[in-house]
Length: 116
Image 1 (tube, rainbow, N blue to C red):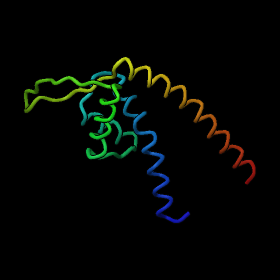
Image 2: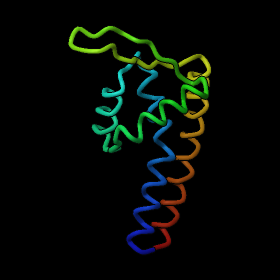
Image 3: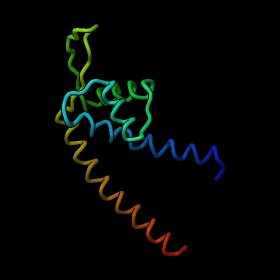
Image 4: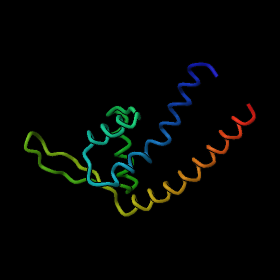
């Protein structure tokens, strides 16, 4: 695998988990988009606004989250996101799937390391 292919594979892995991570962040409480970005960056999932906003819009269209406009004392109103009931059920299923997936990958890594 050359460097470009490796970077593409890593980007696809991040992209595949990004929706799940965003739902996890929003599941705690209503959250503002910049707070989502901050938490993703703290977890070393570097995301830019140009990636986040279309994903939030897609999640809203899928009825997994909703938003609420809140007046801000320091500027225009802010859009705060929260999970819908459908979003909570989706997250529950993703949590279960994540557990199975991580155990499967750990098993493959362990077998690979044992054979090398």
